[in-house]
Amino acid sequence: MNYVHFSPYFPPNYAQFSVALKEAGANVLGLGDSPFENLPQSLKSSLTEYYKVDDLHNYDQLVKALGHFTHKYGKLDGLDAHNEYWLETEARLRTDFNIRGIKTDQLAVIKKKSEMKQVFIAAGLNVAPGKVMHTLPEAIEFVKQYGYPLVAKPDSGVGAANTYKIESENDLRSFFDKKPEIDYIFETFIDGTIYSFDGLVDQEGNFLYYNAMRNEKGVMETVNDDTHIYIITLRNIPSDLEEAGKKVVDAFGLKARFFHFEFFRQADGKLIALEVNMRPPGGFTTDMWNFASNINIYKVWSEMVVNNRTDLVYQRLYHVCFVGRKNKYTYKHSVEEVLSAYGNYIAFHDKLDIALARAMGDYCFLVRAEDEEKVMEIQQFIHAFNS
Image (cartoon, rainbow, N blue to C red; front, top):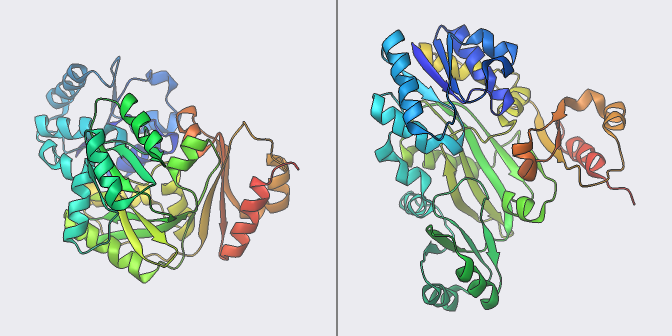
């Protein structure tokens, strides 16, 4: 099997996909814009060949790279970065080179929030009222029906970039005065806790692994307010969340793919479907799964892709919490003091890539414990400010 790992060095932990692909028997072909000598040794050792382009946004260069791989190694069987940012580029390349996976004609329903919403409705899930609007009068009519606040976000966008909370007509008029020339979807603001249902399905669409997370503060608020964040995996997944997540997998007909579905849990307990992402949740979530269940999800995915192995047996043994800190804040306890006090519960800690800093932080800890109360105790210790 010839598998192209696109941008295999970002985020840094995703180099483990290449390592696992090689161990599973694949011919791993790296494609990126970073010099080969800058790659970590584990990644270098896993690649049969690495093709460097000047710019990953230059499609002609990417076509030339895949043409080179095809001429030298034969048909390409897979291509992935596991990163939402590259979803459209990957789909275009898969379409042009007839590579298995999501193609261009499948993109709209998994990229446009307005189309996701229709799939949620068809699956019988609750959604926030909303639609794509292009003019101020349209938005004012929407407000007459639903009121403020609203959330305006790119209909096709990545993460919380260029997302706004609109709380008054002044905000609304200001938004349209500066609105970028792209489609925006407007939704009623949902006040609640964000939950996700995440995992991996095999080549037949059956679950290989799944987990869930709770995020007390949304990425939009974290980015816009430049605050820190924590996200925790759950040992016991609420039944309605599990049911809703499985309905979404069925509705989208996922196969051989990671997934990350987001929901709001309102104060009254009602679950509202928010959006889908056809990739791992990002950051260190794949490692959080590994620590939560004592597995190697990189190996699980690679064995499924290369050898169609689907024999994973697992339990959710621990809660694992991502706790991010930002350099702009002065924390009460240093990294060394955190490790001294709770070292047995810290599964991993390290600096974060600058590209992740705004949403995730400059430094992170992965906290692991069987008891959620212990995890929250450590999270509060890590996030404590100097008084």
